[in-house]
Length: 62
Ligand SMILES: [Zn+2]
Image 1 (cartoon, rainbow, N blue to C red):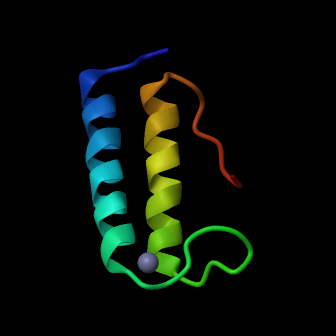
Image 2 (cartoon, protein in one colour; image 1 turned 180 degrees about the vertical axis):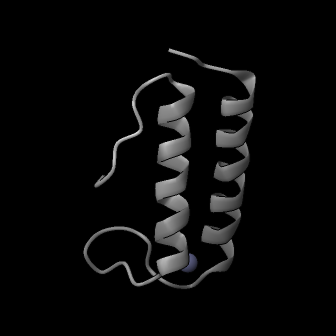
């Protein structure tokens, strides 16, 4: 496990970007009706970055 401050700040930065996107984008971002590819990609990036910051393995398909 190699948790670094860099991983955590990256996760925090991605989350800020994601939240800013949610506030400005009128599309749906959760559930099967989600229709915003950019928001979906950002959400996935946030989860991956957090998983990395937690020291867990980065898995695909979530
Ligand atoms: Zn969006």
